Length: 124
Figure 1 (tube, rainbow, N blue to C red):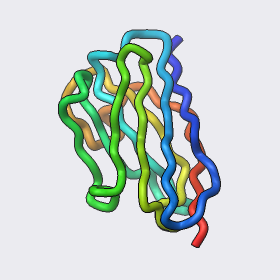
Figure 2 (cartoon, rainbow, N blue to C red; figure 1 turned 135 degrees about the vertical axis):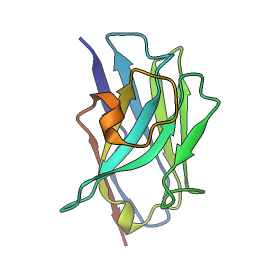
Figure 3 (cartoon, rainbow, N blue to C red; figure 1 turned 30 degrees about the vertical axis):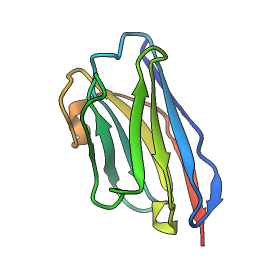
Figure 4 (cartoon, rainbow, N blue to C red; figure 1 turned 180 degrees about the horizontal axis):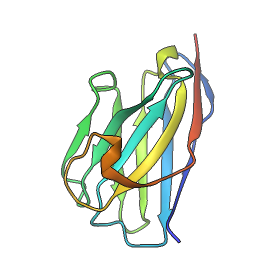
């Protein structure tokens, strides 16, 4: 059974940093694109960042470019999202997702597997 388990979300203050982790199990993900999405209260889920299986290519939403960084450790089947200079508008539930392909993917429909999410709250 495929599982994606996010961790690392918490309440922080504006300007703080946080690192989210997503541990994958149930199949090999080293050749799969992984992504992070988020859903703020009352809004739809939106793309945050994506990374191909090898880790050599990444893409980011304009709203987080320059502040967030996605990376992966295939030996641990884990993907990370380093978030710096957090702002109240970054408050959301953050979801990890895995696709069946190794190309950059920004739309949630392209992802096959999803985690349950981890809450990030940024106070002003």
